[in-house]
Image 1 (cartoon, rainbow, N blue to C red):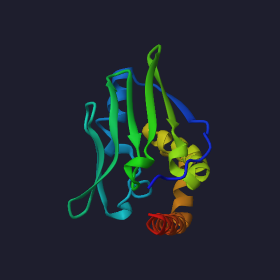
Image 2 (image 1 turned 180 degrees about the vertical axis):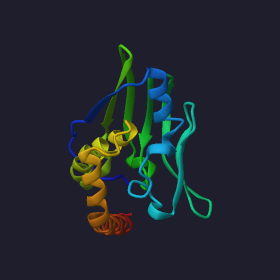
Image 3 (image 1 turned 90 degrees about the vertical axis):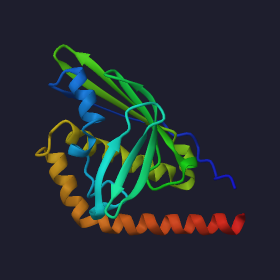
Length: 189
């Protein structure tokens, strides 16, 4: 069964500059992802999430480990060019056919580095595409602020508070949407 295709949506593009050399910026984003990624709010396992890791090669996975040993693949590395670039598919908790593309570049600016993230391919999410794009627009700002070590920024503090209040509601709504979409797919196929 083919999924309905949403109209093409512009990619989400986010950037942040840090006071780290390019190699350190790349390594923090990839090798050290478990030290800064907000697993409690941005994972499949939520409070049961234990780890997330990049398998550092083309074809490697970005994989979440959930208490009890369960693993969930978030995406697959499509480009591995340390310390300049990493690209990967992105479908945490979704079917592989819904995978979007994320391209992350690490651009030296003197002693600093600018990370530039481009998230495209929204149309693969069908009816959820526009809503997902809006959510990721803010979500990537939050995640990249954490990557940049800005845990005490106003954005991070506000998002942390919001996730405590709204997170369970958003998760339930998302799960209902997924169940409805699976039921429609099963009825059609």
